[in-house]
Image (cartoon, rainbow, N blue to C red; front, side):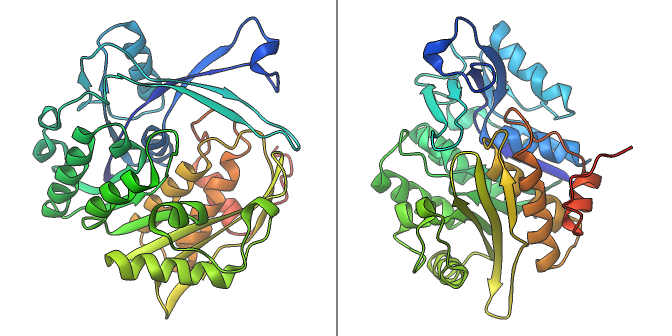
Length: 341
């Protein structure tokens, strides 16, 4: 099996049941999730040798997060234990014209205070075929910026591909801070994953004639966004997800994978009725990693990745609980949703 390593923060997700608002309930449910952890779980479900790296407190809450990863076959051999707390986020699911809401409580989490020398990247990345991070991890603290750079350099030395999902979070850092840090990291990245908002907010690259909030997407404009990102940093490939938000319950979902002017492809467009959109981008990334490692073509990769993401929108929680066979079925064109007997 191909070894894939992801690095980031896993958090406890606290959520009211169904579509209740925070102020309506007396109790809420807890699960776990986080961008890179979501990717790791998807890859484990697809059958890869999936390793997740983070720092977790040594108490029972940290152990619960560790157990959640192990439950789905994620390898936790290199997780560092220590620190005082696990990050938390509260999630309220939106519907119709009321958007979902996330409230973060992650300041001072174990991973945000971790030192770069706590992670033995030479050992962690030995034999790895792929290393993945997002823009969330370096936003957690200056030590994390250097950790991401160190890991990416060693990953390349070991012969692994390096991917970055820009994943800009305005609640974690400013656009200027993100641009400065990610520009350093992008020098060591092979495959960049972004969306229109990420490219515009962080690097000032915008798709023409596009307004995602109004559901207006110009596919030609996204080719120019991908081209601009590639020219800026020399990426091998750029993947752009195209989400047209009709409302909180219904989105149109498509993607582009761009290598050069003679090698790019758009996926099919799916009309998605959303159960839970958290982790949708992470499931796309996992599909891209898996299908690339399987030697698929540009068209097959973007179709496979987008199908994986489409299915995630039907799953409650951060983790994408679908198999490679289910993704393959949708990627091949069976979007009927008919009952399986």
